Image 1: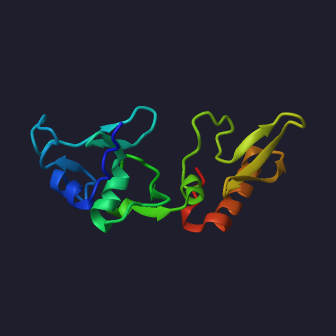
Image 2: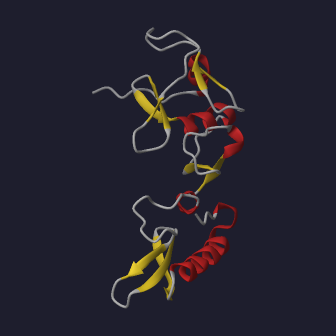
Image 3: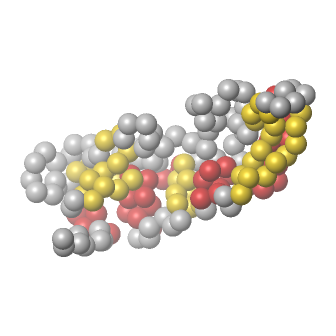
Length: 169
């Protein structure tokens, strides 16, 4: 099977128009004909909360395309959404980040039952455990009598470890 060529900035700009203020991509010229020009490009992937755009047989995240469109460089290792909304691709909402920083800025998982990011029930003693991860290593912050106390420990550690990337909720 023949490998498709990597997308160039010139090709991206020939196909799409990016609005830095709104974060929207619109087609200038649709590859292979198809839809009219000036339509919104891409789709929001189910359960991923981010916009994806297909170009020349490859699918790209819109935030990566926005960064590439403006800077001429791919956002490696990743591009973070400051507000945590993966569909908000305004340029002032995007910033380069490590995977660890991007994870620190993520929202509380939907399956979290404590109501607080970084806090879970430690079933044995029936106390609340606070944990945080950095560079793919889990750090145990202690066990606490209430989820609020455990959350305070998480917030303090997040601010220390991740600074402006720390998200408490």
